[in-house]
Amino acid sequence: MFIEAGRGSMKAWLSVLVLLAGLGLSPTAGADAACQGRFVNLITDICWRCLFPISIGSVQVGKGDVPDTGNPGSPIQFCPMPPLLFQRIGLAIGYWEPMAMTDVTRTPGCLELGDMDIAYLSELDPTWVDSSLTTILNPEAVIFANPIAQGVCAADAIASGFHLPLDVLFWCAGSQGSMYPFNGWVSKEISPLQSSVLVTARMAFKLHRQGQIWETIGKDREVCYKFPSPIMPKARWRYQMVCTPTAPVAIRWGAA
Image (cartoon, rainbow, N blue to C red; front, side, top):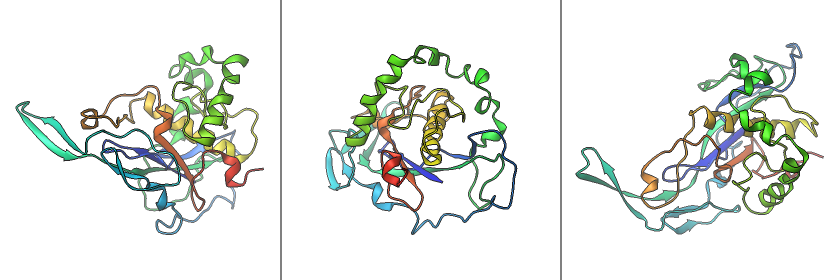
């Protein structure tokens, strides 16, 4: 399982993985006795220090171990509210908010049956298992299906390992592989952990493209709104493996 977190309107970053459960990575393996699990302990299994850094305006009031995204210049923000004559005054507080959990499984329907609401089931989405249907959501994928475009992703892998991923290289998923296609089919798998991180990032991008996740921007005035973002702002997402500290690349989680 992974947790995703993201910078929200007052900035909440995505350190928790997407609101999914049961992402199929390969053809049905057949349910067996191994299809069971333990629900996450919200106190001990989650990296709560990953909420940091915390900022008020552009000033950090709590330092973190990993890089931060941009923040509004002023701690005081004036946001319009209906009717337009009125202004709502607020404090621009930024932190990385755990927002969703992903349960990645190779067996459709196999997931931990806890008490959390399931926001998205990939088994019910035909585009998650059919690459032809997925093209409806990501027609631009054909532009990046070549060695040159994929080779450029080395720069994104280095950037994500040392600072933040490069949003301009939106088709790259850091050191995990390609963001395309938006489905659970992974070619040239390095490890189950790498594949899990990759399909989690793809699902986040897919939900952005479908309008189910909107973007918030850490700039003056713009923190007042949410914006549609068919291209996922990668730098505003973090991923955390449950029971393991967050990291930008799977190898730091012990995948050899």
